[in-house]
Length: 325
Image 1: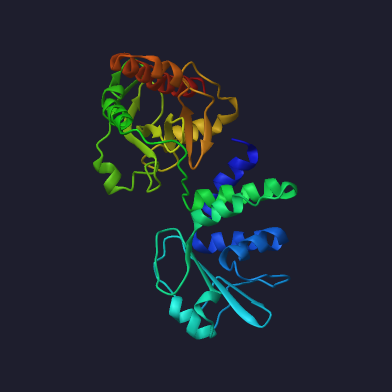
Image 2: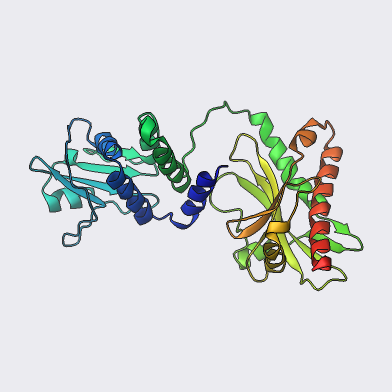
């Protein structure tokens, strides 16, 4: 991931509300006249717009459409939705005295409304991607990256294979065995999933699609490091899934290890089974780097053994960092 892609990805984690999305879309329209023209044409293909002043959130009594503009004596509105299902079709057309065709509506979920044209953010994504001008390519791609993350846009490129889904189940169940360890440095085990429910534990298993994993607890021996709860799982929302171990910033969860690793983050190095650790979305991560070897094994026992080696190496690395600090 490039620096700008990483920036946009992180931005989408913080600025992901409907207002944020509308603000950034408005900023794109203000920055690029070509983008604004494409954005408006998407909603109103029968109109030929020249110069327009696109106003963000025009309040009018109890109505506040996301975008408002006038062109050749006609008023146009655009309403943007992500998850909110409180709709304003007739409210806006009545309040602003416009026909249905002059109300643009876009959502992140399927929605049909008789007499109105409703689009999805995925449709806009595809539409914009086909019209990127060479001279503004990086700007448009950055916006599309943000849009894809915030609206969780997924456009399949490969056919599905149902047989492969059992591998995910096998991985998930095998974590119970991977977490069992007791040696001179630490003792670890699968953590009771009830903690996730009682204390908001699923930081990494968010409602976003494509993440599966489990929490484990670890008690380090002979060093002053409090009992910690980490997470191991797989991000499979990509063509090449990524197995990883993470320790988050929350008190009562991964904070002891997170604080230790964050203070040493620049000096952390790649291991035999993991890439150089890094901080992202409030956690320090160890990405598994033996996927090719893992996939090459024909026996599940060897795959589980490799995952145990990875798990143990991560915890041993943390132990040694604390021992040396």
